[in-house]
Image 1 (cartoon, rainbow, N blue to C red):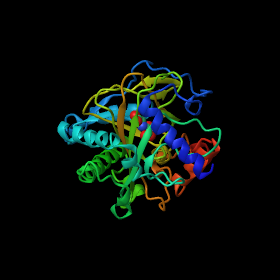
Image 2 (image 1 turned 30 degrees about the vertical axis):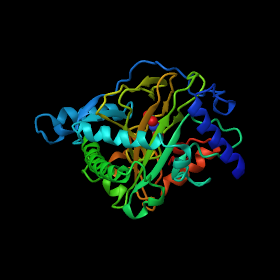
Image 3 (image 1 turned 90 degrees about the vertical axis):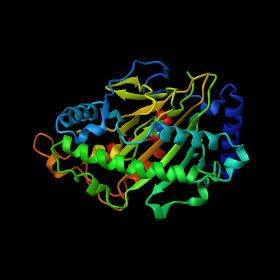
Image 4 (image 1 turned 60 degrees about the horizontal axis):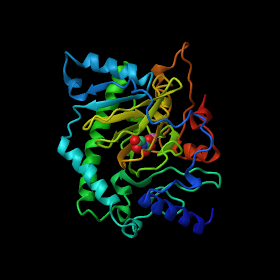
Amino acid sequence: MDMAKATSVSKTIEQMVTHSEQPSSGFIVKETKFGSIESSPPLGPFPVIDMSLFSSQEHVGTELEKLKSSLSSAGCFQVVGHGMSDSFLDRVREVAVEFFQLPAEEKQKHARAVNEIEGYGSDLVVSDAQVFDWCHRLFLRVFPVHRRRLNLWPQHPPEFSEILNEYAMKLKTVTEVLSKAIAKSLNLEEYSFLNQFGDQALMQVRFNFYPPCSRPDLVHGVKPHTDRSGITILLQDREVEGLQIRVDGKWYRVPVIPHALVVNLGDQMQIMTNGIYKSPMHRVVTNTEKLRISIAAFTEPEPENEIGPVDQLIDEQRPKLYRNVRNYGAINYECYQKGLVALDTVRA
Ligand code: OGA
Ligand code: NI
C-alpha cells in the first residue's frame, strides 16, 4: 500500500472516531472465523490473585494453585496486592486520556512511521483486504532504557513521561515477581523463565483508545489475536468492559475490577512452558455509548536470546512441543502478515 493511501486511512479513522458515524466498510468484519461479535458473553473463570500473599507461608500455596489452574486453562488472571496505589493507577489512566484528547495535529507529532509500529497511529496497513480495528494507539518501547525513542513520547500532558517511566519500573518488578511465581507453580527453580528473558528484556507499552461505535456488532476494537509477548499486564478502563478471552472455543468477558491488573500469557511463555501454560486468544469489542481506554504492557525476552521449553517440562508423556527459537517477534510479525498462526510454525 502506498504512503498516500496509508495516510488517508489514518485520517479516516481520526475523523470517524471524532464523529462516531456509521463505520465505513474498511472496519466492517465480513468473516468471523472465531465466532460472531457478541458484546455480552458470560463472565470468564479468571481468578483474582493477591500478590502480597506470595510472601505468606500460610497462603502462598493457595495463590500458586490458582495461578496454576488458571494458566493451564484460560491463560489469564487478575492481580491485586501488586503494590501500586489506586491513585497512582488512576493517574496513569488520566495521562493517557489527556494525551488522546489532544487535537489530532498535536498527536500526529508523535505519529509512527508508515512501516513501524512505534509511535501514535492506527493499524499498520499490511494488505488491501485488511479489516481495520476500531482503535487508536500509542505504542512505546520502555525497556531497555537505552532503546527508548523519546522523540515519540508525548510532551503533553507534561507529566506523561515521568508517569510512564514510574509505571514501567513498577511493572517490571511485578513481571519479575510473577515470573518467579509462575516457575514455582510448576516446581521449577525461580529463575527458569527470567533467565530466558535476560537482563535486557523488552517491554513495550501500548495505550489503546477505543471510541464508541454506532455498530459494535460489526467491528472489532482489536481483532482476535494472541500476544507475541512472554507476559502481558493490562490496566483496563476503570469502568468500561470490552476485553474478551476465548477458553475452550467460547468467548468470556473479563470483568472490570478498577484497581486490579489483568495478566495474560503471550506465545513466548507458552513455548517456554512447553505448552503447559496457555497464551489465550483474546479480542476487544466496542460499545455505542462510552469510549474505553486500556494500557497494555508486553514483556518479552531479548530478541537475540534463544528461548525454548524448559528442560524439566519435557518428558516422555510430554515431548518437546516447540523448537528453540530466536527473535520470535519477527516470526510472529511475518506470520501475521501471511495470516498464519505463529505458534504452529515453531512446533518441534
Ligand atoms: C492488546 C490487547 C486488550 C485491551 O493491546 O494486545 O489485547 O483490553 N488489548 O485493550
Ligand atoms: Ni492482546
